[in-house]
Image 1: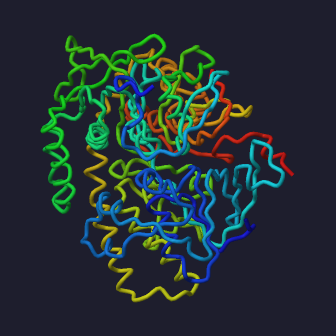
Image 2: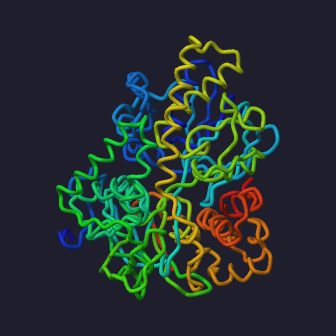
Image 3: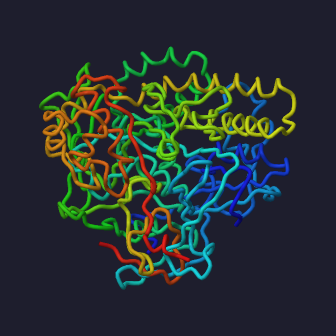
Length: 480
Length: 96
């Protein structure tokens, strides 16, 4: 491993791979860092498991029409020999980004001279930096959501995709995310059982959002086909119900739901109990903005894009010079946008470096595709959102911060005392100071603050993050 | 093993060679390429640690290296994310 690279890409999901491929072949030294054992990010993780080469997308993918669907991306991925100049390091955690794009990176033992377990921390200089850190899931906390057996929709998918292991013999699926149907079909394909899908969105809400898909007929069709597939296989499907409690002594054994009224409030006396070995639940997605925030990149708040997103110009450069971003962190809109933005950001960097990037109309075409893909964001994110009342009515005994074990009651108390910004509430409660550094509870806390105070997102203030943004053993810093 | 009612391993999945790892001193079987968190789940081990303040059990939650709920001790190094680590032959894992 070198100490300096022309371009460092953080994240090798759809955007990172697309960017690396576009940058290859121009005589540049490119470093791709990823914290996972393999490349592929969340969408392609299954397909990048078994090769130490690299991947590229069939060029026909970008000629296949305006909508680049997840399915098309998965199908067009193919393994190739690692292009000259590209170095990939996995299980590498970027801990911080300092001035002049100096990165602090925790790498595993094999890359440390005389390693002995905890790995070591390296300093790496990036001529240009491209952050493609993706997204994570959002949650609406309920009583018992910390019980083993309750997991995110993505976690249930990952168990199958990465390790070929079902989340349980019988899985209950809930929340508002479009991942619900994807997960259900995957479980059935793998001969598991889906107890039921408990979709929090009432049918009327989904119908009302359909006009947002008017330019995305393909995706609407894809969703309809998934629903049809579930109907044919007689999966129990309920709409307009919320999970209010997960029960069990040491592990999950039952899930309690309540019906929702038109405003999205739970209706008393409508509780139903389901036996459950596993509950997969999720409420959409939230951009992984920790690194760009720590690097000083400006943010914008846009609920239709998934909350706080990184501010970019037309070339996908952030407010910090030579730091570019691509994919979900500029707005949650699915893999198609990540693919296009990965390419666009790479072209912008090539242009800055004075490299020949082909005809200008190619970039213009990508910009049009990017705009089109972004059009899907409003539908996706509104579909996943729950009304403010859902946060207002969380019971006092529900844990909000899983790491520091802080309850809703404590948060209510501190908000009433006047701690009404993201930063002050964190200091008053320790919410977000635990191992995950607020990755799970910060988006929840933000929505709780908006709901309880009626403030604007700007008044509530964006989160701040300091290096190291990921946990790292002290021993790794002490390594010679 | 391979009881269709309890086995969570997907029948048709592409698996690497069989390996043995140790959980709290007991031998467990996994296959190369599986992550630690998945291999533990397949063995029926769902409680991975106990939360410090409330004493509540915790297990797999995000599965993608975000939540740090699945941290276990691996080969003597504490607080390793089970979901971000591949199981290897002879690996020593301590839960709780």
